[in-house]
Image 1 (cartoon, rainbow, N blue to C red):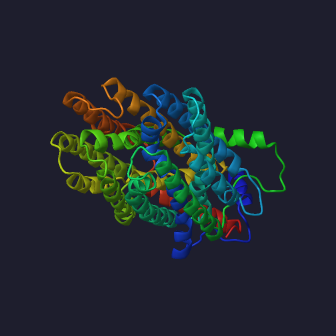
Image 2: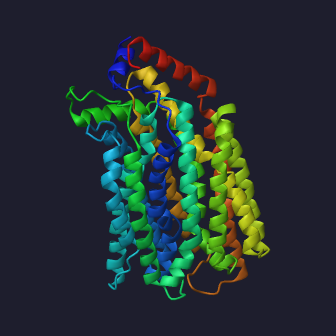
Image 3: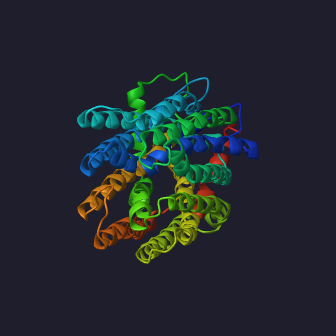
Length: 475
């Protein structure tokens, strides 16, 4: 009973939490992810190549920078979640971080692609510092966008729908970014893929475009679930944040989801970080990156139309298992196509399928909403910020592992930037780029199957929350 009272006191008594979100508000919310896409796509897909082929850093140095920066970002995510979850402001808990985090992210996204004319040792320090600050800003701005959806409404189907619309909006922007990034790099670089000017001005264009996207997201959202403690109850903020962490990390369902996403996303980011090498060196068709990236992102757009229906009919973990199997199959196909030197336009078709089977993003965010409610019912504390960013923590850990290990393994099999390499070396590179991720996807199935949350349990919890709030005048 004490738990129930705790829950009710955490609600805003004047507003109903059962909010039906209009399509305009869902699109406005989705533009926050579009801002993140504009801000970070170049870093996720081109930063390794920029460091090796433009800045001239050795693979080992790149690996160290990537590992440190991404581990730092992984730590920042749940810390931010704990802070934001317990924030009180006139804008809400998460909205102020969208408003103020976006300009900082835009600035350091540009600085990350600024190649200074300084000694190599100083270049390494410059690259590390700018990338780490950029990662921190991304944790704040994107973390707020990711977390806020669970505060917009208590209806799980509306959250799934909002996340699907966010995915569609993000994919549309992703299609644009994928299609124009390499052409912009070459245009600003005078036709040279290794031009520092090309990378910097392309990053500048995307960063400027990202700021209004974040601002529209800020204006379109309204938090109706306050969570945490009431403003009138004063507590030590460190104690509050520590309590949030303790509450979230003792939930085994959350832990298994984190493990599954770490393994799965290690494959995703590992391949993404070295994908450019597949086209530049294995296929000798650098312009194929644009066609492949565009096709893959179109596929990631399509997935948002059919996945919500699957998630509502089939337990979400099984949808995740299906996604892992299909994506592993695509990676095997990429390897054999690379060996056969198939035209990049044909590979783009499989790239579309690869994107269209990436259901794990929606699986993750949909499960998060249900796990937050389940944890809230059992403990009386809504740890939405920590739980969401704990799963986001998985993304950053996977990015750190995949991004840093990929380039090291390529170096170990004989990769040397800007040189003609033997066919045997190219075959080994091809295997690293494609078989490694396929193995990760299949291994991720194991922790997915350990998650106990089901669709039936999620619906039961939603009814329990509604009944308790109605009983106590919360709605």
